[in-house]
Structures are given as C-alpha cells and as structure tokens.
Amino acid sequence: MVAEQGDRGLPPAILVTGPTASGKTDLALALAEQLPCELISVDSALVYRGMDIGTAKPAPSLLARFPHRLVDICDPSEAYSAARFRDDALAALAEITAAGRIPLLVGGTMLYWRALVGGLSPLPTAQPQIRAQLAARYAAEGSAAMHAWLAEVDPVTAARVHQNDPQRVQRALEVFLVTGQPMSALWRQDAGMALPYRLLRLVRSPPERSTLHQRIEMRLQAMLAAGFEDEVRALYERGDLNADLPSMRSVGYRQLWAYLSGALSWEQMREQALAATRQLAKRQYSWLRSEQDAVWLWDGADVEQAALQQVESFLSIP
Image (cartoon, rainbow, N blue to C red; front, side, top):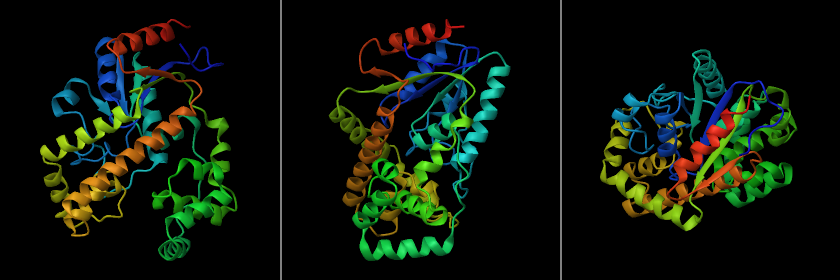
C-alpha cells in the first residue's frame, strides 16, 4: 500500500480515479457500500444539471442511495472553474470529516485533481485582445504550429496538452504572453497549498489500452441508444447556450452540438466523439503515470477486495 509520506496525524481521504470508462465509479460505489464514507465527485461535466446520459452520470436511484456532492450544482449556462471546484471540494471535505466520516473522492478530471491536491496559482484572467490574436493565428497557422510554439515556451504543459485541444493550447499561450512565465512554472509555485489530508490514491484501469477503447466505443453506442442526441437537442433548443460554453465543450456534447448545427454528419459526429474520448483517456493515462503515490488496480475478479485491503491498511495507520 502506498500513501502520502510525512502526513501522519492528518485526517484520511480516499481518491478513486482512472481514465474514462475504466470503472472507477463502480469501484467507488462498492467502497461506499462497505465503508463509513461520503462521496465527492471530481468531474467537470457532472456538475451540470440536464447533462446526464453523455456524462455517464449515475442513475437517480444510485444518487439517492449514494449521494454525491458536487453533482448537479450548476446550470449548463454557467462556467465552473477549477478554482471554484477546489473551494467547493475543500468545504465538502471539511464537513464530511467533521461528521466523523471519510471523504471518498471519485472522478477523472485531472485538472481538478491537481487543483485540489496541489493548489492553484493565481493565473491571469482572460485577456480578450490576446485571445483574439491567438485565435486569428490559430486559424492562419493551424493546430500543429500553435502546439509547436507552446512546446518552445512551455514544454511541460505542451507534453500534457494534445495539439488537437485548442482551448488548452491557447490558454497556456495566453498565460505565457500575459505573465512572461510558463503555466507549468506557475503551477509549481503552489507547493504551500497542499491538501491537508492523508491521502490514499487508487487508480482503476484495464491493463490493455485496447480494452479501454472497446469500452469507450460500447459506452458511446449505449449512450446514443439511451437518447444522448435528444438530451443534447434539448440543450441546443434552449436558445441561451452556445458551443463555446465549458459545458458544451465536454466530450460528446461538442460533437453532437456540431451535428445538430449541420457542421457534421452522423457518422462524422460518431467518429469524432470516439476519437476525442480516446484522446481524453490518453491524456488521463499520461497524467496518472506521473502520480508517484498511487495504487493501480487492474481489471480482475478481486479488484474490489484488493481495493478494500488497501483501504483497511491505509486506515490502520494512525
């Protein structure tokens, strides 16, 4: 069992994460059924009401049985940031601990994990003029050239952000242009804001990437069969939402929005949604491999028992 060092005496918290479609939610629910835990979601899409099918949000019956904090707390018209998540999660952690229970955090939004565990630097607010300049340059030069520029000024961030993620590439370049410092350097300045909890990090994952890709495809098919298109159509027809909102940039929602607007065919939508989800999983894998104090739980008949053993050992440490 691996846990954080130098944090004896701090209250415990359990983190369950993994790439998309890895089974982390099922594992967290299994643990919550057997342990004195309360669940906190770490997912940038689950915060939004009315976004249920495409986010793989647990069914209402499961949420009634296993309440999740930070689920259905925002309208899709709102922006929900990593900074706001950190504030909300810290408040939830404190409440759960004060009640004598153990916080069990589950989700795969790695930016939120990093914000919570390591803190947040005071990154500059959006600069419309610089953003417009970057957007124009992006349109003129393309994603590969912009990512190459980012690799020159901030190789650490460039290694974590794919060139087909223009939002994050442009944000990292914007931070560099405004501050003169790489975004990765600003992140490192937050060592003093570490989470005041003793942490057990559990990573749920299949051993083979191909297995995960199969699950991703099967899950998308199930979502579409369950009415994912109708869900996005209802959001599309509200009239107060647009494709640039953080909620509508979520994987799957972005591609269905483009389909409904006539920019993509059905088959193009499906292929791009699959490609975006696979790319998300790849980024999650890259991030998780950099975690030094994590216990990887691979697929197997005894994965829940293995997780319980890790938790019991972790909780036995005073």
